[in-house]
Image 1 (cartoon, one colour):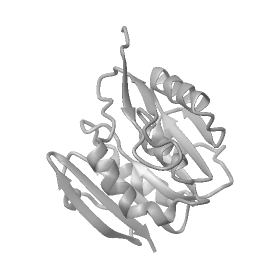
Image 2 (tube, rainbow, N blue to C red; image 1 turned 135 degrees about the vertical axis):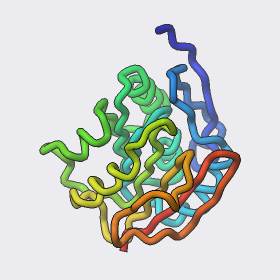
Image 3 (tube, rainbow, N blue to C red; image 1 turned 60 degrees about the vertical axis):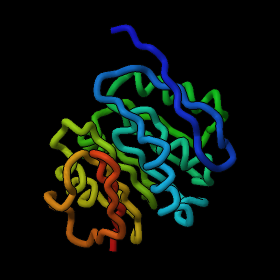
Length: 189
């Protein structure tokens, strides 16, 4: 499959207005500028010096935007090798050594034995809209002790999140719908 490069811009922080390139891959849809602006308004105070996890990283836009805005470290999990390579190239081009890319399925990575010892303060969950894996991913993520207390979890989905079962102890702080996209922010109590 031939890939064509597309790009989106970083909307805030030290790298504001710089471009992130990403390949054309079925199901890969970077979070729009408008939705990212809302998200980062919600979590701006939670980024500086914190560790982030970008599951289903796709273009890497959410994790790279976090690094631009002061996150100390981001782990990018992406199952598509071409997309993972693109994230790695963007990190190198933007001189972001605080990003670590893992090419693996999100659930396989969560359930692996060689997880990082660090816990995460902010998590981005933006699986393909055609996938039914979101609820299971949340349950597995919560059960593996990867999240710090008061972790913020951002979820982007094409279905109403009120129809999903989230882990006990996850309290929804925000919910917004823009077109067909539902954005939710949860707090792990």
